[in-house]
Structure formats: C-alpha cells, structure tokens
Length: 571
Image 1 (cartoon, one colour):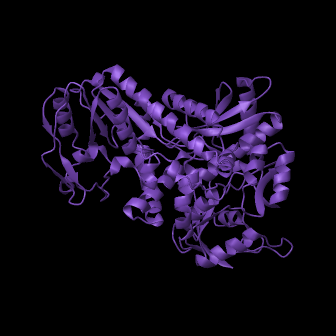
Image 2 (cartoon, helix red, strand yellow):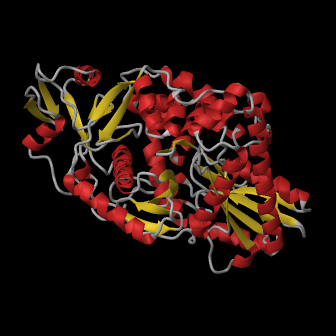
Image 3 (cartoon, one colour):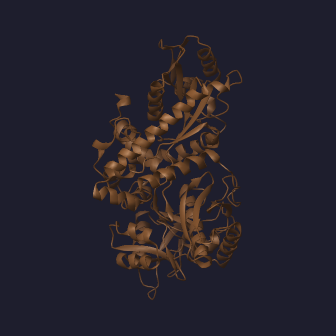
C-alpha cells in the first residue's frame, strides 16, 4: 500500500503504524508546536497508533477497515494534525485529562473527581477526597503525572461489547458512564486502559502519554485548575490567571444545575423520557428572567445611562438586549436599542493589509471617533441622528433616525467591541457606562470526565439559526467557524473579565431541542464534504442526547428562540 504523508510518497509496511511512518520520514519533533499528534485522512481524524496494513498475526479490527476506506476515499493522502489546529488542541486536552485521572486512580483510588468547565486557559476539576484535598495532595498528583508522561505509556483503544463496557464501569464505580452508556445506540464501546484503570474521552487521543508533557496544576479549595499549553507558546504551560467574574458566574450556574437536578446528559435524557423536561424548561427560563431582572436593578442602582453588550457568536446577544430592555421598562426606564454595527466604516474606505487581507472584525472597522461624538452628545441630552450601515452596499447612510435621551431614557448598545477599552475615549464619563458580557457558558457534562465545550454548543446554535433564518448550509457555517473563533480570541475573550456583569445564556435543556433541528441536516451531509469529519463528530456526540418535541413549552422571548425561531422580539 502506498500513501502520501503531507505530500511525501511512502510505501506502507505491514504492521507499522502511522507513527512509525512519521518517524521513518523524520517528521517527528520534540516541540508541541510542530510535532504531529494525529492524522487527517479524507476528513476523518485517526490516532497515529492506527495500523493501515496489519500483519496476518495481528488480525484486522473495525478501525483498520475504516482507515482503509478513508485512505481509498482520500486517494492515499494523509495530512498530519498538530496542536495548533482546534482538533489538535481537543486531542491534547483529552489526553492530559486522562493522565490526570490515571494519576488520581493510582494515588487516591477512592477520590471522586469531576471535570467541570474551562475558565480561560484552565480546566476546572473538582476533587472530593477524604480527608480534605490539600496543596500537598496536588503536588503529589503533579509529580505522578510527570512520571506517567516520562513513562510514555501507549494509548491504544480497545473495543468492547456495550454490555461488557457497562459492566466494566459498573464494577469500577463509574456510575456516570454507566448511565450515559445506557443511552448509547451502538452495540460496542471503545476504551483506553492502563493497569486496572479504563476510561474513554469521546474522541481520538495522543499516541502515548509522553506526548502530553506540557501542563501544570493550580490548587483551589476542593479541586484544581489543569493548565493547558499557552496560546503564545505551546511548549510552555499557560500561567494561571484568576478570573473572578467568570468564576462567579460558573458557580451560579452550578447552583442552578443542582436546583434543576440536571448536571449531565443522562439527567437530561431521563427528564425527556419521563416528561419532566417541561418543568425543567419552565424553571430554567424563570432563572434566566430573574437574572435579567437582577442585572437591570444593578444598572439602575449604578445610575448608568448606557449599557454596552458584547459576547461571542451565538450567545444570544440580541435577545439578551431585548430582555434587559423589558426589565428596565419594569423599573421605569425607557430603553433605546442601538447597534455598534451601524458605525462601521464604508467598505470603500477599507484597504487590505500587507498580506492583502482585510480583517472586518478589527476595531479599526468601527468609526470610533464618530461613535464617541454621538454617545457624548446623547449623554448630554442632545438630539442625535444615528447612522444605518447597509451591509448590501457596504456603506453608512443617514436615514433620519434621531435619538434623544429623556430623563428616564437609557441606551442599550450591542456590538462585537462593546467591552474593548479602545471603544470609549476619555471624553466619556465611565460612571455612566455599564458593561455586560453575554455568553453561553455550558455546565452540562457528558459524564464526570467529559465536559461539553461551550464553543460546541454555540456552534450548534449557529448552524440551526443560519439554516433556519439565513438559508446557509451546514458546510458554510462550519467553514466559517474557525475564522469566527479566531476573531473571538482576539476581540472578545481578552476583555470578558472587564464586564460589570456576566450573563450566562446557556440553557441546560437546549441540546434536546437543538438536536431535533440539526440532526437531520447533519445526516444529509455527503461523505465527500470537506467538513464531513466534523459533521460525524457532532453526530456521535448528539447520539447520546434524546431529542425533545417541546417547543410549545419554550417562551417566545427565550434565548433559544433566537436560534430555533419564534422569537417575538423580531416580529
């Protein structure tokens, strides 16, 4: 068998793995920035441990057949994946979490740990240990993790019958996985095992533990922060940064999840099956409404005259602005909604950079000076004509839209750069400005060891909305998503902690509703699509979730209505 690895023709020898071929071609390195960690074959991701052509005594397995099919489909092309790709970062995260749990199992076998969520560059993991978890315990774990990395244990998948897997996890006390696997639709399940510890992380892993050598730990009461490689230098673990605002909102979301008795997908599926998901929706929506009311009260008590709202894509910013406006009306205010988009510079005045590219998300695309002139005038009680940006013509127009703030009036301004410190000039009295960060911060887990990234849920939201309201295909939305995430990393996430308040717009029940909309569309994507692997990955994830036909229960002002339709704010 002949393949082309990163463009280089190579004859595959019987029994050798993709990793063997990588090393034979001299493509392996010691740097995480350049080291191959997985392979893309015809859009599918494969661990480097996979063997394309087995020797007779090795026998075949289902993965071998899947890889051969992918190699044929891709014309023998094998593209190596590195940490710098989003898929590479996901593979790396799964593996360092595996190393952490392996160390915990060896040192504290009776401890119960749960992966919670990402807070900035770190992953929050709770540790329930008797006696109480201490900094010394964390140091012991760090030391053992380093030893596991140095030992370079191979990470090889083993396929089990689903009943065998359920029995294995039941005997091991991993009841969270038992509950989840009872919802699995296939007759098999793959695990990674070392010694008496077996686990799975719902996706490909690094070839061995030796690859996961960039990490660190930070103690917190009741747990740790697992620090991933730095965005600036992947060969160095990121430094811990305390983020009190995000920490506070995640803690609040944890309390909500406990109140609603819905912490994981199995909880949600049970509620869908027994019908109590309808009550879950009512309680979840009531909690959102109460939170908007609290934020509105804080704005009024502060004496603010303008609210700046920012957040990443598909966080429900527009609905949040309208719901906040409703709560401000309850408090006797007259809210006026504006958009930063209307201050875009005419496209005819925008010139490419030295690379011939235009970053339309750059803050320089906003006419900051004119925005501040108008905002200052409005705060002084003057009558101002607000521009309108026509995206079809790429130009700003004056259409006679005049605004003036009365005694009880208040501006609500939504836009990508709402929290950027460069947006407001020194002329603006910052005491009159309230900054609100809106994001869908998912706290629902697949199981105790597998979190659901907030980015993945926002992608589902966007795919549904783009198809329902903009006629965009799944492939188009997926094709733009990496660019969207890069823009968020540059223009939104660095400023999230500067907000006066953070509103978590995630809904614990939303995956059951989103699946009903997106699942048929995903299954219609052809295997020849360049984003087929991403589609398959999403389908595999959604296979664990029961869809719910409960849209008659969702309020017309719900955040979710911004994506599935029926939002009364847009009628």
